Figure: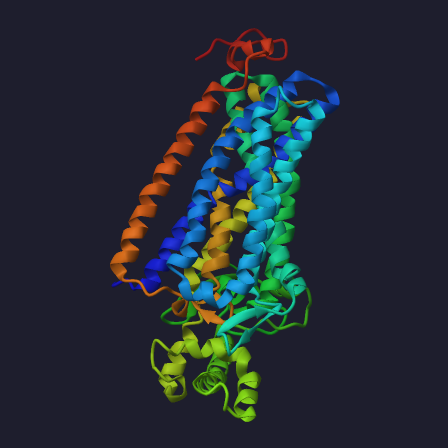
Length: 534
C-alpha cells in the first residue's frame, strides 16, 4: 500500500505521541508519591523516609528529563506537519499550550532544581514546599495539555469565521470547563498515579525477592498499594465518565468501541468478545451481556445508542448540508464586500456541517457536484477500523480491573503487617508484581489509541478532517523526518531504560542494617528448622 503525506504525518505524530507518553504517566504519578513520602519525613523526622524520597526521586529525575526532551519535539510538528491545522485553530489551541508553558512547565522545571539540589540549602519545610510545587506543576501541565486535546474531541467555546477562515474563541470559560477535557484530565492523571504505584510496587517486590533494602521496600510497597488501589478504582470510575461523554459528543467512537453495527432497543447489550468484519460490516460472532452497554453509556434504561449504520446515514445528511455551506463559503470568499445577506444566512444555517463537506474533497473538487456513490464513500470514511478499536478498549479495561485486584492483595498484606509472609510463603505474588510493571504503560497506550484513532477521520471532531489539516510537504520529506524521530526516540528510550535499571540495581542509600537479612529460603519460618537453599 502506497502511503500518502496524510498517512505518514499521522504515523509520525502517533509515534512521537506514544513515545512521549511512555514518560508522562510515571512523572505525573511519582511526583505525587514523592511529595507524600516527604510529607511523612517532615512530620516524623525519620531519616528512612528521606532516603526513600531521594531514591525514588532519582528515578523520577531520569524520567522527567527524557519526558521533556520527547515532549518538545511534538509541538514543533504542529507547524511542520500540520500547518493548516495550526492556522485554523491557533487562536483556540495556542492559549492552553501557552498557559501550560508559562504557568505549569516553568513552575515544574524551576522547582525540580530545588528538589534535587536544595536538600542542604533549604529547611525541611521549604524543601517540602518545593516538592509539592513540582507535583502541582506536573499535574497542571497535564491539565492544560488535556484542555487543548479535549477541545479537539469536543470543540466548544469557539466558532468559525468565514472572513479569516479560522476558529475564534467566543467563550474561554467553555473551553476551560469543557466536560470532555475535564473527564480526560482526571482519567489521565489517575492512570499516571496507577502507573507510578505499580512501578514502585514492582521494584519493591523485586527488592523483597532479593532480600535487599527491605525496610524501604516494605514502606514503599505499603504506600504504593494504598495509592494504587485508590487510583485504580478512580481510573475505572472516571473511565465510565469518559464513556458517558463519548456517547454525548462522539457517538461514532462509542459505536466502534462496542462494534455496534445496528441500533438496538434500549438498553443496549455489551459485547464482551466479538469478531468485527469491516468488509461485511457486521460481527462474525459476539458474546453479549444484555442491558449493560445501555446502562454504562446512557445511565438510563430507555435511551437508545445509535449503531454504526445509523450514524453513517446521519453523516450522509450532514455531508449534503455541508456541501451547501461549502458553496456559500466560496461565494463569501470570492466577493466578501458584495455578497448578499441571503448567502451569508445560508452559510450560518449550515455552518455546523461545513467540516463534512471536506470529506468529499478526496473524491471531487466541488462538493456540490458529488454523486450519490461519492457521498456514500465519504460517509463510510467516518467509521474508524472497528477491530483494533474494539480490542484496544478491552485490553485497557482488562488491565484496569487487574490493577484493582493486584493492589487490593498487596494493600491487604501491607495494612495487616503481613508483608514478610510474601517473602516466606507467597513469593509468587512478588513475581506477579514485578512482571506487572509494564502493564500500566500498555493500558495507557491503548487508552490513547482509542481516544485518538477513534476520532478519525477528524482532527477536530466534526469540523476539520485530518486529510485537510496537513502541510504541503512531499512524501520524501515526511519519511526523512519520520526516520529521524524514530532514531532519536529509540535512542532516548534505550537511555531511559538503561539508566533506570542501573539505579534500581544500585538501590537506595546505605543505612539499614536490617537490609542485610539473608534470603527467606535460608531462614527459619514460624519456628521451624532452617530449610537449605536450593
